[in-house]
Length: 415
Ligand code: AMP
Image (cartoon, rainbow, N blue to C red; front, side):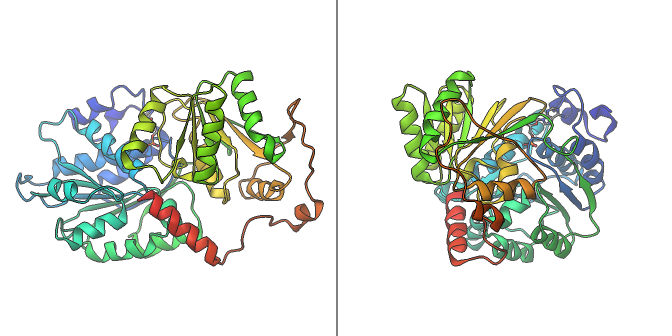
């Protein structure tokens, strides 16, 4: 089914003419959004979901009554969890709008950078705002924008928004929006808290569930390698060289480890860079740009990079440290195998975290064989008591104080 079957104006069709056909989420979401209905979509990043909501929302904006050039009332609000995702979504809006005669004014409102340029940018209003929740509320409090005329609201990566502890901010934002509006919720996973959010705020939504083809992750080959914790960096070096990996995203559990592993790789002649929330916005954008342009080979990142980053043709993702939650595993490996490309996701499993790995597998309906690489055979084996304990390193449902602190830190890093 070609894009031309949708009721989209010609300049919008031209913007996606380089794509052979709509992806599944696009095919299912675009008609619903065009009619103004609410939508609840479970779709991974990489499924083409951004274009799936941007195209019809632009069409609705074009079709709306005359657009005033001064004091533009905010038409569409897109809430995202991180500033990187905000930048990507804004780019997609601008790319899709590039051929329109009248182009919308698109402003990105994210934390972690000075608020003044955003206040300036919002002078005279904006048609589309892509925002992280905390900064959006700051701007509203300073009367830099009003949400009272919003026609469509998008919650992108709703699961991540909630993981980062934004639920209070979201409630405050919903209260500022007109009651009659279109709500679109996109989430890679669908835990209870996302369901609760949807139940409370969506009005008879059309549900779309884009399963990853054939149940698992079709074009992502998942691999688990058993290794001693202190041998992980040498193993990583070995794999980069032996497998001739051209570009690798390595996930670690802390900013310190990111810096440390990147430094160790550099010392061994491998072009590597760290990416985490402690870097300023400029440094993060630059690192991403350099990575995309292959100026370096390995990006060692915290979970900040797990969602929303669209790094063209990323062939390999390595879990140097395992993710804390099974959902984050999905997000991390989703950085590869995007838009039809195949990818490899490798997890390093140590004796200490093997029980945790089993839990990640269980929650993701996976069962991988733990491989051993010649020359890196582990000396330490898993404690069988830990394995039978089943829940390993994962905490129960109730959040501990530590979890809350972590959440707050992650949120701070993201904004
Ligand atoms: P997203 O799920 O929005 O993060 O999209 C991920 C990737 O899919 C981006 O690199 C887009 O350029 C690409 N993409 C979006 N729509 C299509 C399409 N119809 N066909 C092929 N690739 C697409």
